[in-house]
Image: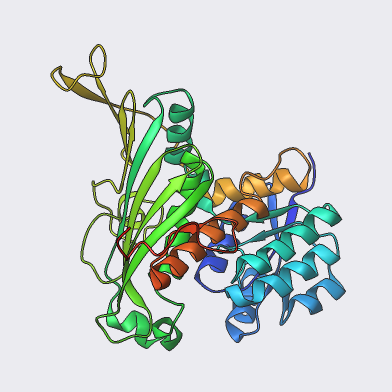
Length: 359
């Protein structure tokens, strides 16, 4: 039997703690160390009987694990990611990959040139429900995907902002903080995005950022997705409250994604596929069947996948390039919501004239 894969966790906040727990639960993995500038990380490392370091550089000078998880604040991802690449250490970076797509491009280019595996922690792609949906869509369960409706509504209480005032500042609204998760899943189902048109509403609580935004994504396949996100709406329709991924969120029996195709429709995460009995015809009966799926912790599946990528047995499901492409879409949503223009992904200029004015 081979030795466990040694993985270090850098950043011991909520998600870093969950990654460490996943690593410790797996007999095929070993928590190599905890890196955190605060005393929280050192206290946890002592309790877990693993080495602790104050900085990534200090850890790399003393120990080279098989892989590194970066669960630090996003502004640190570029510098720390480049440090991992420089020493040839495979890295799993929490989403979003970096603050800007320009930074993400620099990091992915360096990793590709060095031949170092770079993964982004869009863990929803590792969810059994998502994998079952992806397989069914690829097999033609709904025919050609024509449209998607995605809802990301929830209410963050005042104390969520009080304990971290940066969450009230410009650039920390739900577009930047929350939307990247859903955008990545829509890209996973529908492919690359061509253009984005969005509108946002200023925060009713008086914060510097938005608290509601809606975007229309046009995919290169021809499909169109409408996605709405808000952190100030009381509702059960969000991935967090429907997917049962994280016990911190109360579970509901609702769905938050509707996928419409030429031969059928699918709702997620309940995995219901709707089809007419014989052929598509709104005058004939329509019924639903439920797909089955594996029910495993997606973070654990993701970490096991990371170990296989380190060993060279698998290629990254969510590569740095995938993380870059999802970030580009979120940037386009933010830009369009300010300018009122339709933004073409990958272009320096808006794709069309200002759509707020008559043709």
